[in-house]
Picture 1 (cartoon, rainbow, N blue to C red):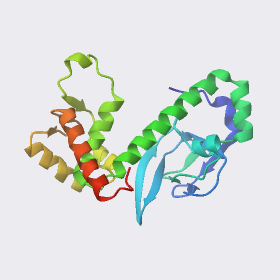
Picture 2: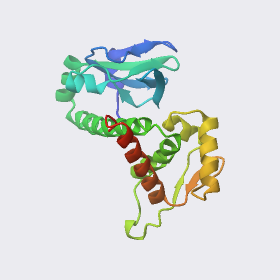
Picture 3: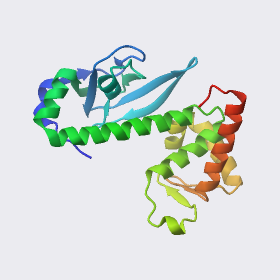
Length: 223
């Protein structure tokens, strides 16, 4: 869903590669739309820093502080020189009232982003590396629409590389490849250069569910 942002150039700000744009836990009342460049979303789990996602032009971040007046839930760092549109509560209200069609598009994007971020965080809360990789495929399957669920065999084809899966699973590509090779030996997946075929996504979903239940039984604070 694309947005015409040409009317809002007066809200543009630039950031240099490596510059911190948002810091986790700090208060904030602005959100940002990316016009050019890329940023990464970083979150601290215990003493480990993990990259949750990489955002590209046309995407946005920081909306929860604006909608809920809550502290920042993650840090945002510029991966390269970026040009962003910065909206605070005041000029966002002007945007909402002055352009209702754009406001509806933004609200729809906000809802999807909130769901996607919670889903990706759920993957990273898994302590088992094998379960994290499997849950990435479950997440990707959830995001795609089945043409005919009544004849679903469970087979899925994902046009993603090992590096892509490693990114979402929060681990190195080498570790991810090691796990995928193990799954391949079990005939759960077939790995190609730019695609990965899952034999039965429902099998992986059951595997993730069982590992999550074991983790929760060992640590009741995990949800």
